[in-house]
Length: 333
Ligand code: 1OR
Image 1 (cartoon, rainbow, N blue to C red):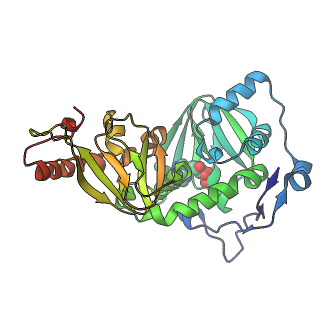
Image 2 (cartoon, protein in one colour):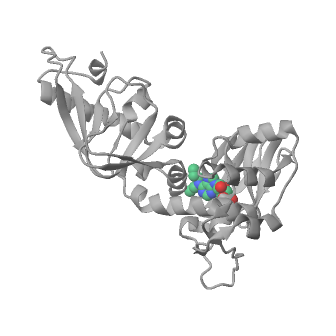
Image 3 (cartoon, rainbow, N blue to C red):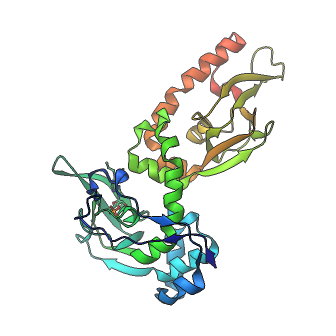
């Protein structure tokens, strides 16, 4: 296997004038990354970390990492390499797995059990989230060479899978960092996503997949089952509905609106678990950042209320176009 880039690992050095403490980890010092090709055989295999596992452990690990976003961009061989290097760690209730301010040593994936995550705001510890038998943590300190940004404590007996810093940086860092940087500015500028913490927007970046559509291509079709949410990165799209519902029901396609960069579509069917209420067609060549339904539900929870509020805008547009009081549900009849 040939990896296209080489990572230089910089240990955190608090005396370094560039050193930034973890208060705002997203602005922390970035690891240096150079574009030298790296051959797996020559450079990595020598120090390859392998923790042998039973079939049962391997199966459990496969399940635990299935939805871990930062592993999704690994190819099959890189994935095997990472899974080989992970080892099982039993954690008793009450143990601090990670302590705020420490240096980063491992990245963790939750196999089973619950853990709470605390950050410090104005000197006070505040619980910000709970990992409940799923999820992963500890990537920030390894990615940005910053001290740990949060404390993670097991609230019950847990089983974790740990990945050492070197393997994490050799295989996971590059793809994840590139993706987070690629989407950072774009996502920061989307009003809908202002509800999210910057850490949550980073997780969103991990989950997005850029997909291209040709001018004229139908991206979603009215009446279809839904599995994705879209944010336009480039180009414009038309939203159209077939008039099977107004009192005239002409069966003709009517243009409802036009969408451009930074605008989103495809949310209604996911929120209300209904078929697509309208079709969206690329007016020009289009690139969309696409999120699957699982990631939509996990990552965009704080934005759902705003999206729901927007439904009344859709309905006023319908009424304006058809001259009668219509609801989104009428479109699905
Ligand atoms: P780490 O290596 O810094 C602590 O070690 C880990 O806690 C961190 O990586 C993340 O994986 C995880 N802010 C900072 N770290 C968080 C957060 C978080 N959530 C989980 N971790 N926030 C919570 C966002 C819902 C931001 C709060 C302002």
